[in-house]
Length: 189
Image (tube, rainbow, N blue to C red; front, side):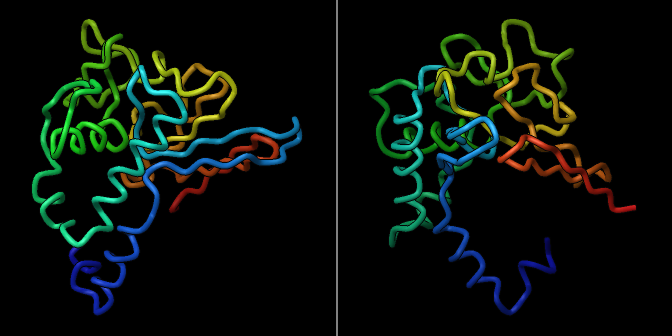
């Protein structure tokens, strides 16, 4: 990371990264016909639809791309509020959206996030389940996410694809070919 931060084009890379979407949506022609795909880093709140997920993601993207993005970044990290509700405003609103999209693994049925647990499904904290057990983003969209190497690529839900298989920890890098659902794994060794 230090090598990246000290590189001559670090600011250019950071500026580019701030312009990227937090949630990517596309409709792709697959072997099974046209299918919707949603790609995000971590997860979504149980009550968010696909449309709401894209709208809320855009709110954070606007903050990241605005002139005052440093103020957002300064206050972005934190564990509160613990869940989404429509009355949230300002930095609390942006922080909770950011936490769902980039940090959530476990939540309860009303969306209270448990942001400390990182273990796999067998070690779920009492009263919490993986976010994807509650998601209502779409009945038909394929959902692709990372951020949770302990799942080892398995969710138990055919349309929810965990792609983080622990490459950063010396395991494999996994890719999913959307057209036919074939997984590819690459190992450093």
